[in-house]
Image 1 (spheres, rainbow, N blue to C red):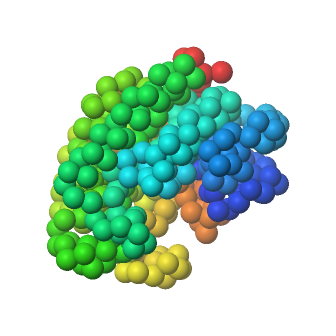
Image 2: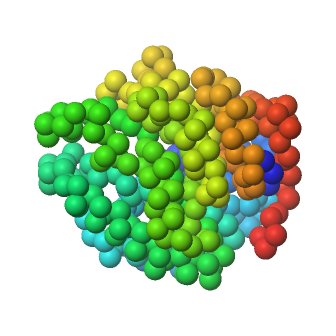
Length: 334
C-alpha cells in the first residue's frame, strides 16, 4: 500500500449545517494530525432540491481555505441510482455532488452502491422487487454511472461505490414479506464486494471504482458466513478509496442508542481502529497494490480519541511495511 494521506470523516449530524461547528471540527482534525477530511454533503446545505447552490459553495470554500487539508466528499447515504423512487432526481443529486467535489479540490466522491432494494418495502410503499426488477435496477445504476462517468472525468473526480452492512430491520422486512433470512444478499447485494465489482465492470470507466469500507465488510461477511479476506481480495483491483473503523462483527439487536450498542458490542460502531475485532494488519496486506487515502470514520461520541485512532492506524501500517506519504499530494491534485 502507498498511502497518500490519513483522513477523518466530518460527521454530517455533528455539523448539521452549522458553519462554526464545521470550522471547529476541521480545526480538531488538523490539530490531531490528519491530512485529509471527508466532507458530508448532507451536513453542508450546499445542495437543495438537486441543485448546487453557488453562494453556499463559496461560503464553504472560504471556511476550508485556511486549513492545510485535502478533501474527499461523501454523497448522501440515501442516494440510490438503482432503486431510488425518482431516478432523475438521484442523477441530479449525484452530479451536483461531483461538481461540489471538484469545487473543493476533492479527488474522490463516495457513493453508497445502489444495490439495496429494501427501503420501499420497509416504508410499506412497495413490495420487495422481483428478480427481474432487481436486475433492471442494477442496470439502471450502471447506465446512470456510464452517463455520469465522463462528467466525473472532466472534473477530475473518482466515483467510489461503497459496500454495505446488514441491519436487523432488513431481516424483519424479509420475514414480513415471507422470505428467508438467507435471502438478504439478494435484496442487499452491496453487502458482497463481488456485486459491486460486477457494477464497476458493467460501467467500465476509469473514473468509477470502489470505496472499500472495511467496517461494513466485517459485519457483512460475518452475517453471510463468507471469508472476510477473500472479499477484500475480490474488491482490491477496483479500490480507489478506503474507509476504516472498528467493530465486533455483530449485527445490531434493534437498539439505536450508541451507548447500548457499545455496551453489547453490536452494529457498525465506528470505533477507533484497535478497539474491537477487525484484523486490519491482514486486511491491509490484501490491499497491497492500493494507492490513495485512508479515511477513518469515527462517530462523534469517540472524537476525544482521534489522536489514538490516528496513531493506531499509523502503527498498523508501519509495522506491516506499508508506505505512508502523509501530506503528499498525488499527481494532479492541487
